[in-house]
Amino acid sequence: MGECNRCGACKKVCIAFKRGVATGASVLEREDRFTCAGCWKCVEACPEGVDIYNLMMEARRRGELPESFRMGVKYILDTGYAMPMRGVNAIREMYRLPKIRKVKPEVVKKLLREVELD
Amino acid sequence: MERLLYLGCMVYNRFPDYELSAKAVLSKLGFKLRDFHEFACCSSTFIPSVSEAWIYLSAYNLALAERRGLDIISLCGTCTSMLKRTNLMLKDEKLKEEVNSRLAGVGLSYSGKVRVSHLLEVLKENEDKIRAHVAKPLKLRVALQHPCNVFRPSEVARFDDPFKPKAMREIVALTGAEIVDYAQEYECCGSTLLLTSKALGLGAGASKLASAREAGAQAIVVSCGNCAYLFDRHQEEIKKQEPKAELPTLFLPQLLGLAFGLSKEELGLDIRRVELG
Image (cartoon, rainbow over all chains, first blue to last red; front, side, top):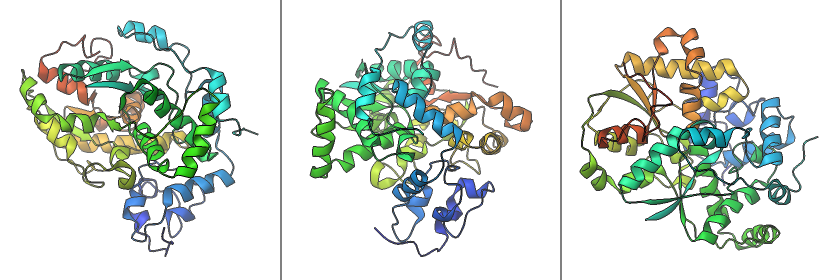
C-alpha cells in the first residue's frame, strides 16, 4: 500500500468535492469524512495506490458519528437490516412476491457483539 | 443455473419491482432463482464506519449461501462490493479462521467458495440469450446510470472499466432502445450524500437528471436500489428544485422485460407506475 503524496488526483474525481464539500489536499484530509458518496473514484484515481477505503473507514471510527449513520448502525444492530422492515411482507404480497424469513436478531447480536453505540 | 438472489435492505424494503422484474427476466434466461431466507444487511457503509467487525455480518450471508451450495446474484452496488470485499479479505487464512470461529457461534462456517455477481455481470455473460429473447424492440430514448460499486474499487469488483464501464450500454443496446450520451453519464448519482446532507444529495440528483433529460432521455435506467432511491423516491423534491430534472426511473430488468414482451404486472410496473414521456 502506498502513501499519500498530496497530489490531489483523488479530489479531482470526488463528487462531494465537486459539489462544494471542503476537502484538504486529498480526500483523506477532509474534516467531514461522512459526507462521501462512496463512489470510490478516489481509490481508482490515486497514483500511489493508497488504501483510501480502509483509511477513510478508520478515520470515521475515530470521529463522532452523524445522526443518520447512528440510525443506520442502530437499525442493523437491532434488526439485521439498515432500515425499518416492519411493513415489508405486506408490500411483498402486493407485488405478488413470497414472504422471506428475516434474520433472527439474536444472530446479529452474536455476529456484531463488540459493536456498540454510546 | 440455480442461484440465490441477494436483495439487500434497499430493494427488500423499497423496490419490490426491481426484485420482481429481475426474477422475471432471469428466469426467461433460464436461471432458477431461490429466495434468500434469513439474509442480513451486507454491513453497508454503516458498520464499517464504526467497527472492523462488519466482516462477520457480511460473511454470515456468504456462509448461508455456501450452506445451500448456491452462488449469489446481487442487485445493488454496495452489497455487491461488500460481499466481494469479504471474499477477497477471506483469502487471508488467519482472518478466515477468526471469521469462522465467530460464524460457529451461529452454527455456520465459510470456506470461501461462493461467487458473488451483480445482475449486470450475469446479464453480460448472457448477451446471446438476451438477444434471442427480444420480441418487441423498444422505441425509447434512455440515459444510463452506471452503478459505481459494481465497477469500483476495481481491485474488489474485477468487472468492466472502473471509470467508463461499457456493460450496461452493451446490454441496453440489445433492447433496441436508443442510449443518449449526456455530460454526466459517468458521474456517481450522489444518493449516499443524502445521509449527511439532503441538499447535496438532491443537488447531485437534480444536476444528473437535468443533464440526461436535456440530452433527450425519456427515462433513466438504473441497476442499483440506492440510485433509484435518489432518482425515484426523491423525484418530487428534485423537481421542485429543478423543473428540468423531471425524469422517470426504470430498473434495467424492467427495460429488458419490456423488450422481451413481458407484461407490466410481471415487471411490477402496474404498481410503481412509470410514465414514459
